[in-house]
Every structure is written in C-alpha cells, then in structure tokens.
Amino acid sequence: MLIVQICVGSSCYLKGSQEIVEKFEKAVKEHKLEDKVVLSGSFCTGSCNREGVTIHIDDKVFTKIKPENFDAFFEENVLSVVR
Image (cartoon, rainbow, N blue to C red):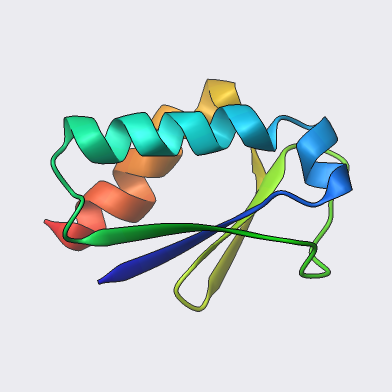
C-alpha cells in the first residue's frame, strides 16, 4: 500500500493543493488504484518551498508539484511503483 500525504497547510493551499488533491483522486480512480494507494491530507511538514505543493509518498518528500507537472509526477512516483 502506497501512502500519499498531500500538504494542505496554508502555504501549499495558496499554491494549489486543492487542485492537486482533486487530480490525485481522479488519477487513482481512473487507474483503479483504490486498493493500492491511500490518499491523505497533512498540514505543514516543514518542507515548504516557493513553488508548488509538498507531497510525501511513504518516506520520500517531493516539492514543487503543480497541476502542470502532475501527470509526469504521478506516472513516475505512483504508477511505476504500484504496478
């Protein structure tokens, strides 16, 4: 099971975390990964950056995730791991 935590703290919220959450929900459903991926929100984990949203996948931290780079991020860090 892959644990995905999307920061929804104020800084990431202002950088589009709600849209990233929606994109994750849609992608997980489209790829039928509901039994392989757990999505959760988290408040600031201290990895803030000036661009994009911070996401933790298991023990890895990813920063600068934006709607325009989401598809590549999902392919590389979720799909390639669970398949």
